[in-house]
Image (cartoon, rainbow, N blue to C red; front, side, top):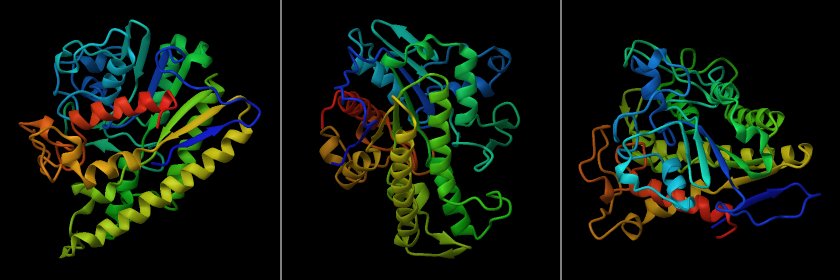
Amino acid sequence: MIYYRLFFPLLAAVTISARSNVKNFVVFGDSYTDDCNFWRLANPPATVAPFPFPNCPPPPTGRADNGVSWAVSFWNVSSSMPLNVTEHTNQETIRNISDIRVVNLAFSGATCNNTDFPRTHQGSFNGTVVDPDVSSQIEKYVALNDPSMKDPEQTVAAIFIGTNDLGFFLQVFRDNETTDILPQGVQITNEADCVVKQVQSLYQLGLRRFLVFQAIPLQDVAMYSADVVNGVPQPGAFLSAFMTQVVSANNALQALQLQDLQKSLHGSDIQIFPTFDFYAQRVANPKAFLGPNGTSTGFCNTNLGPCPDPQDFLFWDSLHPGLVANNQLAAAVVAFLNGQD
């Protein structure tokens, strides 16, 4: 498994411990990370409440994984006083119990920025809702005036974004529609450019430690390997091959640009979590990572319906990892921050 660790060359590499050296874990992202933020934004009376919004209903309502966010599981794994992830009924944006604070600002449907990759929900919940992109999430973080901004040595800012962004290119390719989907001139490079800008924005706020997640192998996800192009049936491998190129190009560009970025951000510590390999291993052999009742396909439902047995599947629908994958991802992130392969 390849781990990217990018350290500013003038600083000594320090082993990172999620228990002792990380006190604040601030997360930005989309539905892969959202723990009910979008639901609270879109459903009154939560829409009129100041951020952070009121508490969520119990899972899976408001979560895209039929369970709880991996960020909640991260808090469980890294905290010395973990909660049972199946019994969370009082979800909050900020978890501030014991020695680990997790500030989850991710919103379902989000892209890196809505200028290049515009996303809204039409006719859902409370009318049209603009999905808060990472730029907006950072603005919410600033509005919180969270103490983590004043503790750069013990704060890690994580960005897990790109699934919705890269999905635009599949839609353009599949439907041959460019005018109404992506703004003119937007290319795959825009995604990596945007992630770099978001890291720069957080650096300017005073943060110094960053964890950027690769795109997962979207070519293996049911939603992004649909077999119709311009209404004409195609072999499943046709679109899968296209998404393979998109994801590979994005991850490579992101790694190169972040490496260059770190040279210009004095005192920064930028690491790339190998999300691609993490999921590729599980998609290739899901039964090896599931319990005794695990399925060979890894996908529960491909129609976005609820999964009756989420513990037996890696993905609970055609796009979103389920509870098992999230728990394993959380453990892998903690191990990664601890310098463990």
